[in-house]
Length: 187
Image (cartoon, rainbow, N blue to C red):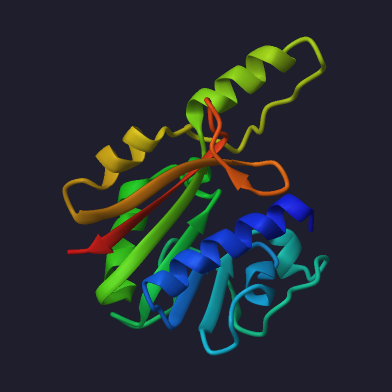
């Protein structure tokens, strides 16, 4: 993993510690690398639908990895107190049904942490690189801004906090930040 990826994972872990969460679902976890960053006292579970993971072409860093075959999560109601959706929301074609499923598996005080690339930054990045053989990710269904995510969750979730940031060997604020993190509580 890159240094910036590790810096971001540690930043996310600080948010989990702030809210004192102990049972975590990493949705779209890829290889479960985040489990190597967090405290061993936290019960970690990862889900993803990447076929390379199913075919074991990628090393998986945690034994509690589940291959997601459908949108239904293989966990009982109110099982988790934290769900992380890190750089995954833009790839989801039906976020409303996914959010309903998240509410099902989150307990009463559960939180949802969403990390996304910033829509404005992605637009500028594309524009600045259009003549450099830039190939956009075709699995993106929608780019989000912080206000887009707040609007998506405003009816059924309580907004707790948000931070916009960029990573340049540390978390910092820029004029146009490349990412944002939002935290919502189940209501």
